[in-house]
Image 1 (tube, rainbow, N blue to C red):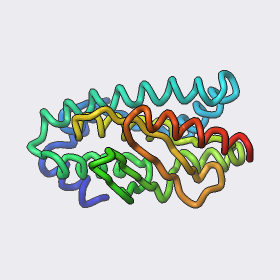
Image 2: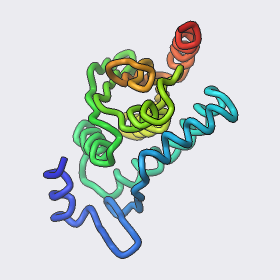
Image 3: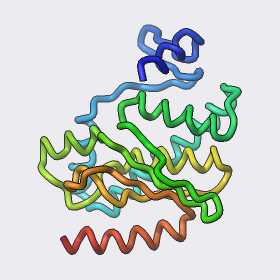
Length: 193
């Protein structure tokens, strides 16, 4: 991860200025993990999981789409190279180490695993285990990026989460209809436990 950050600095793709950070000429911010875990907790308590998911996921997906469109403009990377670049950016951002565990281009399904979600880890430390998956913003980030990177409509859902006591955070990405059906089944399972 540090080699990647150093390469970005040397190539002037990562700019650290007074009061401003940009990556590939796109402004970014560093936010403490506790902010996101507290935001998720407060929203769960106020409006429930479904509304929390809809708000955070939709805005993260929209933001990732905007970011990836700009990223494509500001780099010569294409296809798989661009997808790897985005994965390195997310990893460097502190959202956990992402691994694509399976990719089926025919069915347009992607399966990813995060080995160390700081959002889920901090949530457990502060509030205990969650009944629901917690990495909603991460889920939206990747769904939005896949929309741009693969030029197709992708949605996503976190099917297992460290914050629920699972060993890993696992995400499934695919066509919206498939993800809606998957989300319904998984939510019934989450609520029955």
